Every structure is written in C-alpha cells, then in structure tokens.
Image 1 (cartoon, rainbow, N blue to C red):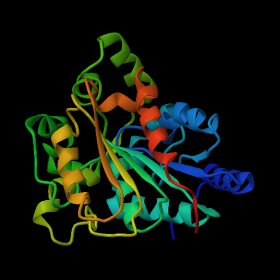
Image 2: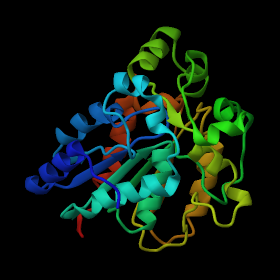
Image 3: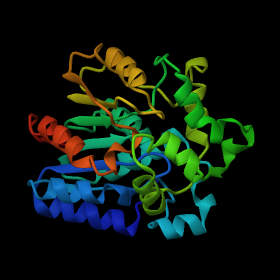
Length: 284
C-alpha cells in the first residue's frame, strides 16, 4: 500500500470538505509538486479545489531535494501511478487531472484506469506505440541514458542540460532563475523504462488507447520542446484517437518544455481551463 503523506492527506480532506470539483496536478521529472503552485492558485480563483501529490518519497522543498538526492532513486512508473491512484481513491468526486512531462504520461494512465473526469496532458512522455524519437529528445535524455548505472540512481541536471531540455526558448536570465527555483534531481528508472517501451511487451509504460471509458483528453505540445518534441505528442494523439472518447490536440507556438513554469504559463493554464470547463464533474 502506498503511503499518503501528511500534506497529501490534508489536501484530500480539504478537497472533500469543499464540495468543489477537484483537479489533481501531476508533476514530471526534475520538478516537485510545488512547481504547480501558481496553477493551483489560478484554478482555485476560478472555482476549483486542487491537489498536487508528490511522487513517492519526494522531498517537500527544492532545498530538501538537493540535500537528499537519492530520495528520488528507483521510482518506477507503476509505483508512481499507483500512488496517485491511491490518493484519488480517497476523493469524494472524480477529479480532473492535469500532468506535465512524465506527469502527462501518468495522467493518461490514470485516465485509462477510469479515475479522471477529464485529462490534460502537457508535453507528455511517450508510451509504448509512440514511435518518433527525435535527436533533441535523445540529447535531452542523455544525462541519464548515457550510463546504465543511472537506472537505479537519481540524476541532477546541470544548468546547461536544464537549459537545453527545458528552457531552450528562454533568455539565460530567466532560464537560470527557473533552474535555481525549480530544478531537483530525478530518478533514472522511468527514463529507461520509456526508452525500452517499444521493445518490451510487458512494459509499465503503456496506455490502452482504445478505452472508451477514459474520459475527455487534451494533449498539449510546445512547438519548440526538446525533451518531448511536438512530433511525439502528435503521435500519442493519433494513437489516443482509437478511443471514442473526446480527444483533442493543441500545439503552442514557440514554447519549450518549461511552458508550465516560465513566464508564459498563464497561456497554457487558460487552454487547460477552457478544456476542463467543457466537462462536468462525475462522482466516484
């Protein structure tokens, strides 16, 4: 059984007491749940209640994360998704789910488990069946994938690596500010799982794209994203269209992988808001 932290339990109780439509935010690699704080304020000002669980064993702050980098090691895809499933199972209302990067992949897997009323996957990591593998994606993943020992380790990005993978569309001043404020080590395991997904029929990195019960899904791509290039998100969109459920795609011009934390995040939040507003809450 996955352990719910004190903070997560407080957020669950707050959401249930509010009677409002919950939105669960799912962060990706090299960020923490706190990276969603501006989004949470944005959606709560518009009548929603929000939760941002961490991955299992996530430190609560960037400072703590840098002091204890190995807390991130050996986190598998299924382990993280099971944790979010456990949190969601405690909610009185079926939430809407918004995820970024690996969090966007996890959001789709949670929807596949029929735990989401509506899902927004932003620059989501690919799943089994997504075939494009652009050079920029390979370079962004190379700090982890270049050394097999990293499978069981946590890996911190240098500023140069973060700038290439996340903030390539930003000036150096903002890029450094985001690096200092948000960047934390991340587990190598999910990247290796994703890299081998198309060779492994038993991979945890998979989604049933034909599931008619997964609910409405919006996939968002940043045109200039190096870590999850738009062509990867488009390929996921084409596969997800196998479901009769609503499936939409939106590409945002001139945006990189940092689109949820950089100065332009409100543009992305407005797109996500417009989508979730179309869909009614569903009680679990």
